[in-house]
Figure 1 (cartoon, protein in one colour):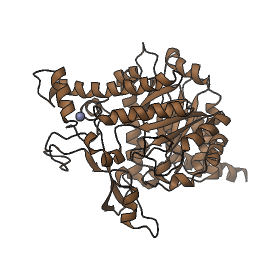
Figure 2 (cartoon, helix red, strand yellow):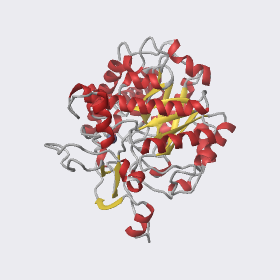
Figure 3 (cartoon, protein in one colour):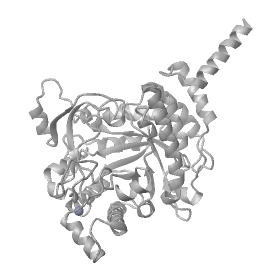
Figure 4 (tube, helix red, strand yellow):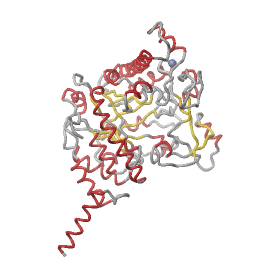
Length: 472
Ligand SMILES: [Zn+2]
């Protein structure tokens, strides 16, 4: 893409001071989501993991950074903290922290904040409240209902011999609703029983629970970064949150203005999230100034980031060390599922790049010292799509991939080759080029032929064959 933005030296200074001059190449693990993509919710899976083997594989494939999703949207915390819920019983943070330290790998943990299904079950009083009866879309609630809805991504399958009732004891937010079909669209790839998901009010006791948990995690474990996921409102509704706390705060801040309407309402919602982001950052920095903080962002048009999720890019950026845009265009569709899905993925990739360019000055204002570090998907896409994302969304700090389980052998091999280029780069350098990733793909395709042969590869193969025939 022409005139792609690049972070300035003052914007990369923080990372350089903290982690040295090498770009980051990170892979992430979501321990409760099973061995493939991220459509499963499985509390046995964390106990089957071999952290030593995982870190070995990470290292062998050239990654220098590792991200662990300690707390996912279900609410389980895979650590040993007295106040949280850990159905697996395993302390993966302790295990990975030690291994990363031994192997000189940067260790980041990600924590989901406002979205917490388990707390929706145990503490329904902190869940956000809808204040409108929907007219057209999402007619799944009434005014006054809590923002607890069927989960979009994760599904639960019953292992042999386990009844639904037994599973429900383990996952109390599970419903009897069953999703039977696996589709190609993003929200249709799961299969199994549908759990609930809850979005909590940032003004409720849930915020206290989270801040306490974050402090515990940073005090107890040696981590290089703590990343905030889901510091936002629900992406599907504009009428959150209408609880008494929010109504009171709004009327105090904007006396005489109508609740839930107009510019003031949007500003109020955005400020609510920023205030929480600031608390998240301060909690971590009060334990250790050196720990890097970041906030995950779903890049989108302003109407979406304002009216739905209420993320004020500029102010959130100010409240933490770095923005973490989740650039997953090829989750929309991959050519491996057919031409139509390939086109859809390409269109999303085109849109994401332009949107990132447009909103870059919000993520990283020129006069600021804030970085932009993107995370992109290595699952549910192929090697070429993955590498295209790796170069498109590296703005000078490197790239993070998502996720460890579900990345194919061909992609792991592509990662290894990509890391050899990235390791030669310095922080602040422009991303590797299209030419360089083509050279990688040539090697990958010889070892792992592509499921759908790209046109350029077909052409090259043909030319090669003709060359051989002419010689013979
Ligand atoms: Zn509220």
